[in-house]
Length: 173
Image (tube, rainbow, N blue to C red):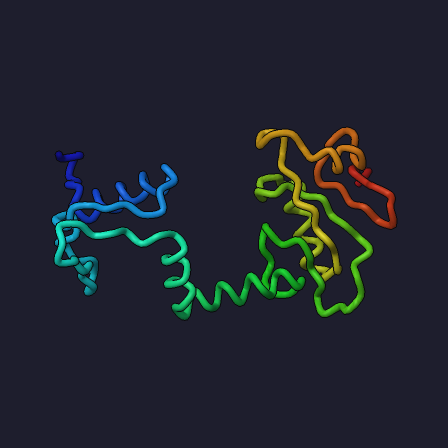
């Protein structure tokens, strides 16, 4: 099969089949070993003596990737973010900026990082290093907003800031 100047290789077909298997919910599947005869870079995929080879499960792949230097750095970064340290990231739920106190401000922002108003607010928080808790809320395009958030912010506007129990959704500036 030819797509323009592109010819899918056995490796590509195997990769796409792996994606289909994973999306389908299988943790492992047996495939003919003939599909694994190509090599990727300098690393050849090993074949068993039988006619099939088992694709590793997601758990095995996760363990293998976390054992690499990059994987270890990513795991470390996730741990730092959970403590309110580390780099800025859309999934942060806490930013401490070397403060030991519990933040008094909670910012409710979109969980996907699409809202430009939430981004502007986060840029200010990062620039001024304001210790803050972050509540991640889905935008309406991703489904209904949580009932707890809607009780605090009946109109559902984002971003919303809660300071000492008072919620602010819009400024006059």
